[in-house]
Image (cartoon, rainbow, N blue to C red; front, side, top):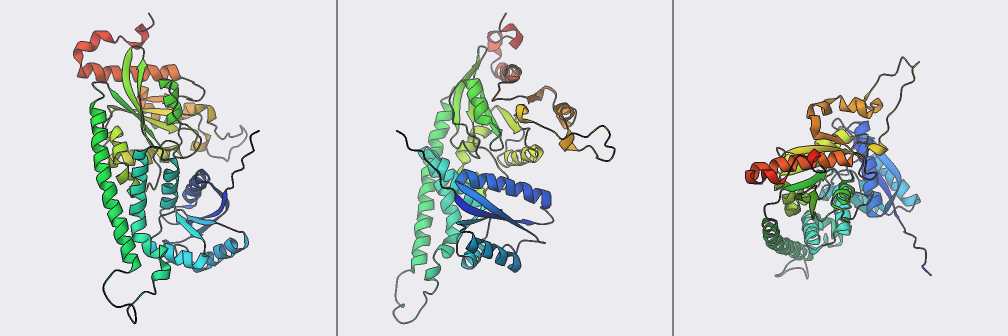
Length: 404
């Protein structure tokens, strides 16, 4: 008989700030996302703390009064971790640890922890390990506070390194070793990509948890791991897909996120090469998310950073089954219509209208409008293929002619 397994979630509190650049609405949205990240990492959020500030406190991120409030709550509620919504400097982390006497994690550390949990292949583990060591190096002093008292004097003179210097050297050596390993892996990946022949390459890109893996499973009839958690997919999966009689390669890539740590962009270079070398991007968007426009902007920003913003792109608005909008009563003459009140038809008449046929509205999980999606992908891939290999034109008829 199987025993019932109970998962013990670590109790955590979240800390964020409201500034000129990050108003109250945005701060709440970031903390919602941070809570989802915490849940994905195995934590349970007990409380949130926010503070209005011009800029974060350079010593402790938040002010003294708010820090005392957090300290009191941590002591009385058995809190395991305090998670901050921005990347903390090494000195901030050290100061906060001294005050709160518990585990202090920032957004970057939390994302790295999730990546470490999700990494399945040797390749993904190497990428995550490199990012973690790059993040750890400047923070070694915070981890070795008991060594701060090491200084000159009786018994302390003579050659050799202090323990902190030894550890820094070990970490630098490890980073150097991992970088060499990554160069070897990059070459292997490049050879693999080169061996794929003349097939057109299509890459699924988008914010994390928008349904890219679910969509890939639907159209490639494969079994890629998909889950309603952030960063369910870390390893790029490439499948040969045939729509009608037209074959092409489809890759499912790691999801993007706002405030993505720079260490991850660097260490996931090869994963992002799948996007760089793609002939067509399918930008998947969770239209049921209230801030999907911000998600699009974040993805476009990262695509710009990896020099892939000008590639042919089809926008795929997913999760139309989960989309809902606020309504205004017919006798309500006060409430102004905002984006929160837009129906899907209203959205189609906005900036999306300018995309014409390059905007698709589907539900991957319910397979709604999937035939329309296949028709569009077939048409665009066929166009790219025929441009590249004009003598193959007769092989691939128009989509409508496939069944006839």
